[in-house]
Image 1 (cartoon, one colour):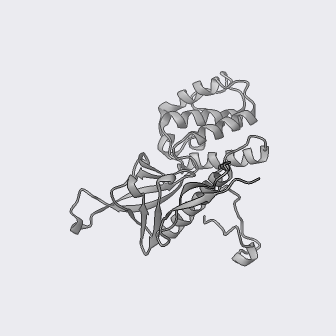
Image 2 (image 1 turned 90 degrees about the horizontal axis):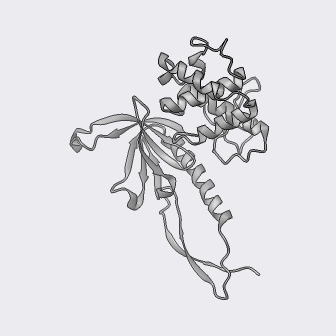
Image 3 (image 1 turned 135 degrees about the vertical axis):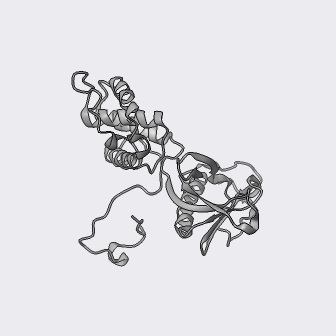
Length: 273
């Protein structure tokens, strides 16, 4: 599905009264651990993303998450009932691991260790483990990139997935979803969507622009802009005023789409009384 514009009403967006909508978190923020409703929403959204394969996982990570989900759904492990063949792997694991019959005994062994853990604590652990994944909160897009090993005039391309998270842009293998390269959002200087291409400028962190061939340029741009706004707001709220008799000068780096040049400026910070 597509995200709706949160600044407009459903009527303004032309959403019919009978249309079914899904509630989900779009921009990932820190969970404070005090709101059980927020925890449940994060758990359900994380679980669905794991099982669908949206958040790619290694086998060990998938096994641990499956054990926690078993504790949440079934309660404590019972050796007389919970034997190989009990687990519905397609409900616990992403497609990449659900056909691996050898993983079920490992899930059961891990589940056994969770005896006594409450449903709320298991959900909290599930979300915590998801948050530790490199791919957590990722929104992935299928793109193509030019193969640098080929001659430029041949214009050879190959597919991959590019994912955007709360703190990075991730390039993933098209077949295995394995992470090939991670770019921190703090390294991003400019970006632009134009036609069927999307261009990223990482300044001194890359020798050249990173150009993606995709029809999802505007969606990628909006997602990056949202996370950049969150990062800049967090920095602004966390910055301390400089207490001095004289004005203190600090460097400020502006991050913006390519059409608005990234600028390095001098700003004066004055201590308040």
